[in-house]
Length: 343
Image 1 (cartoon, helix red, strand yellow):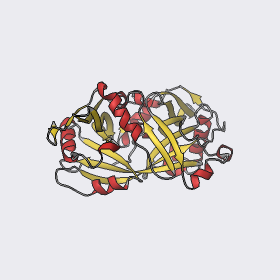
Image 2 (cartoon, rainbow, N blue to C red):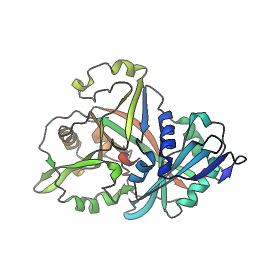
Image 3 (cartoon, rainbow, N blue to C red):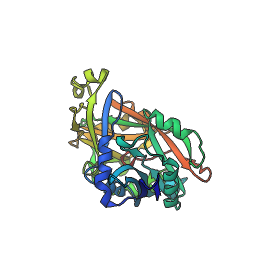
Image 4 (cartoon, rainbow, N blue to C red):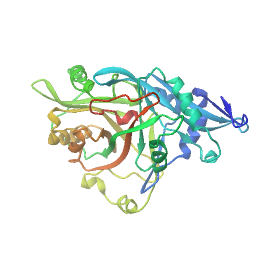
């Protein structure tokens, strides 16, 4: 699809667009006291595909300069919704290269194009960082030819470590996990049905058992082969905190500026009865079995494990969680269980 006197083309991306998409990711950054750049190196299009069953990524190209001006789209995967497996689309957000901001008008065209490509998905959702005020202001207001963004609640990502062998933790024994998928995770909305997506990375399963029953478990994975967080700089109070021996205080060690953060991702976290002490003891004990500098886990505001995470010393950042609908409301009845590793 061409527009603006054929200066730009809107089309589906493929692996040949990796270089142009990567340039846009490297041009982005977070604002605030912690300036972090989220990357999908070395092949961002392939990284999107790794997060689901397929990826519907669109790009806008400058036909005169042969450059990628913008990228966005959706990752499609089977997830539990209201207790049943459903085809869902997670919107990855729209990124525009700084050289093209305010120069091209295409938002409505891009949403229409994307909607055509994900029309087989019953549920669509996304997250927007709390600090992205401009996107929140624009998308929460209902506009003509645009989908409706319905706010479903706050989502917090916890960055923690504090590894210490407190309780015995078993490694890579998945016996009983299938029952947890059937009886526990299936009751949460937007939990991926498939726990082996390569986007999670290479990982191990950690568990604690009582009389053979799993009472605590999770996967901890290394996804840095296709997803990275790059610490750019510290500002405000974080400039001082980053120089302190935070690891001795139980907090994650602050990475050096201009470095890739050595992180692992926690997924499919289960704690019997949402026991706060068990949660903290288990995660610290599992963390002690890894070599990561910090671990990430995310949960929605109605997830009781978020209050359990408060027993850990962590650094947190927040997002707003939305359902996105073109054709009317799709109601969620359960607790949101979306995995931060795939957002």
